[in-house]
Image (cartoon, rainbow, N blue to C red; front, side):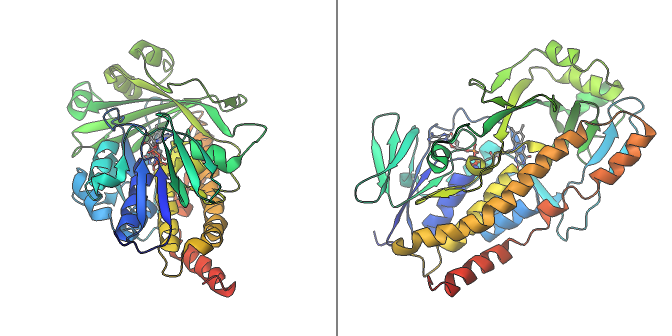
Length: 420
Ligand SMILES: Cc1cc2nc3c(=O)[nH]c(=O)nc-3n(C[C@H](O)[C@H](O)[C@H](O)COP(=O)(O)OP(=O)(O)OC[C@H]3O[C@@H](n4cnc5c(N)ncnc54)[C@H](O)[C@@H]3O)c2cc1C
């Protein structure tokens, strides 16, 4: 087969970002192989929300229409949060408004997203059950991926898209005194509830029109409608923000829990959250991990990180995978450029590294601050006024970002430094 570039690419991890990246490279005629640890049959059926910037990146990569077709929305639509007191009488604290020109979002099941993207790929370029255990450089200057089954694979460029527990990250950060992946003292209980069940039980807050966030002290509940508002997706967050961060917890991080454990921790909440918890049968508990401190560099040699491998963050702005798609968009623009070739790969990756860590790490830190904000409501009028002010604009920097300008400035530097 004739390829458009004189270098080969191996993608470690075939999740949301890895597969998106693979589609763009394969379409550009680049030799690419994806190594995925799982078979996707164990894929967690969680939903993921894509904001305006994530949608723009997917459109720029030419895969948005395929993703939309697999979602249960006909088109992306505004999803602006309403913040409500977790205690009776569930006063509205703040209805989010935005100045974003295209304030639309899409909620999709992870398996549906993966199915949409897999359908765009030649199956022969994806290797399943290939868990990468380490990376190194061979004598001929190529990178070698070592797999749990004892096999290896060589490539000129490795993209680490292997998620929060990334092996590629270990290569990129090298020997550091402390693993930056930490348990955030945050747990999320997730579940789905038929809307009709909540209505029949007498819930007063309308959960069918827009996402609702019940605010409290040390906890908050996110509710958003899916499947044409026939089902409500629930995530109950509880956090101990002032506890020192702990090192990575033993796996698994997602466990089934009893409903009683959950209800016990929320006894002080009002009427509507109690109805929600009563109906959250078989919840799963997620121990949320993130990078702290954020990585200053996403690149070492010809290994480059995208997605959670580079900036695993708390999910409070619903922005994690959007940052991953922004990574992929920038990387694809630079690597598929007609003048990119094997001999200048390090210079090109350095420009990716100029623009992505500052942007994604800003969003990571804003997500942490947002979690503290959501968990700080003491049910007083004074607090309501404070929160109205502090919640105003929290998504603007995430959604209104000019990614094209980053690509233009990276290309300009490559031209000025005579790389291109
Ligand atoms: C409770 C919760 C709610 C969230 N809500 C949102 C939201 O609404 N919006 C949003 O944008 N983000 C959200 N996120 C974050 C989002 O899920 C992640 O940012 C996103 O999945 C990252 O995509 P990724 O491709 O980097 O990693 P993943 O999707 O995790 O993919 C990594 C892939 O690599 C594979 N892999 C792992 N290790 C290896 C290895 N050693 N070798 C080979 N393959 C490997 C895995 O099997 C997996 O397929 C949420 C997260 C949580 C926990």
